[in-house]
Amino acid sequence: MVQETLMAVHTRRHTDDMAQPVTSGVYAIARYKLIDHRRRPRAELADVPVEDAGELVARDVERLHTRLPRTMRQAVRFMKVEGLSAAEAAERSGMSEPAIKVSVQRGLNAMATFAGAKRK
Image (cartoon, rainbow, N blue to C red; front, side):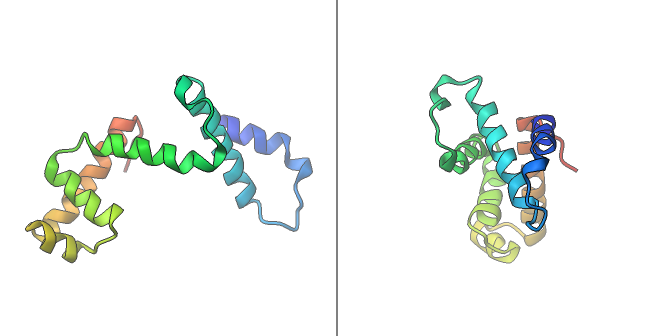
């Protein structure tokens, strides 16, 4: 997908307005490439409009999230989905603040592994 995105950027560079930032155009191309990629293997996603790309990502993240152990899942949800601070998440869960931070980090790493990506 990265190669396809870069090739699309390269082949369409002559149409770019050099006075405009490139970032939004690159993001748009990458989004379309992601949607194209998602459409290939799964017939039920073949008619998903571009506007719903965020929903596809959210669905995949939720699938990955449910594979985590309960405490890890809860820590990730509190801090990354609900936007709580580590102190707030620790208070809500009954865990210590360092334990919440470790749980979130390990949870994100596990989700990246489940998705086939490598996280540092």
